[in-house]
Amino acid sequence: MQRYTFYEGSLLSVADLKDMAYCPVIPWIKANTGYVEPPTPSMEAGRAAVDAEFKERVAEELGLPRPYRLEVPIKSRRLGLSGVVDVVAGDGPFYVVEVKAYKRPRRRWRHFRLQLLAYALLVMDTMGPVREAILYMGGDAYKVPVNERTIEETLRALERLKKIVSSEDPPPVTPARAKCAYCGYNKVCPARPYLAAGAGWPRHAIPSTYPRESQRGHS
Ligand code: SF4
Image 1 (cartoon, rainbow, N blue to C red):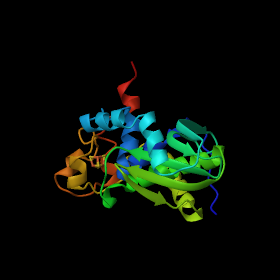
Image 2: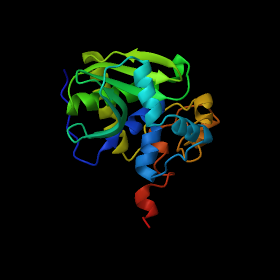
Image 3: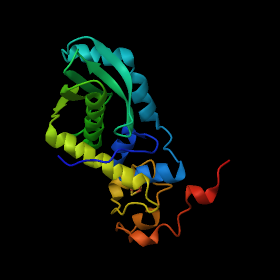
């Protein structure tokens, strides 16, 4: 297995990894401008619907062994990662569950899969082995394998995230019209001038035109 560097800066969050899986420019925007997408009405409704009680009912519905630990905050300095896991069930090996209020088509949950794998990684690093990772979305439950391949994939994603947030330049992407239209960062995205053209941008074109946090000053 490849060796990974330990992270010496502040901890990244699993949400950053999830955002990166949607578009790698998002964690760069968050790290370099401090802008965070305001919650949409559907996000707020989803959060309100999925409270601790709901998560406990999901664990019961899935037939997971007790005890249930709900909304578990986990930090790993070794990984440089933190997050709040919806459900950690059993005495170990553990069951890890990420709960979403609404169903999604399979092509639209790649970022949730990475989020779940990152939670499994945090549990493995701080609590012990993981037996199963389950993504629950509006009544549908999908098991995501936790094995050497998927853990390696998650560690690679984490390494990539660390590079993105510590880079002065945004990662090059090819903006996709449909995806960008729904993105909560499209108003501040450095790719904005390129969105209409539907083309990628040359890496050197952005930094000179995009104000960075260090250039804005702090209040
Ligand atoms: S607007 Fe498009 S390119 Fe910019 S962050 Fe969002 S998805 Fe990525």
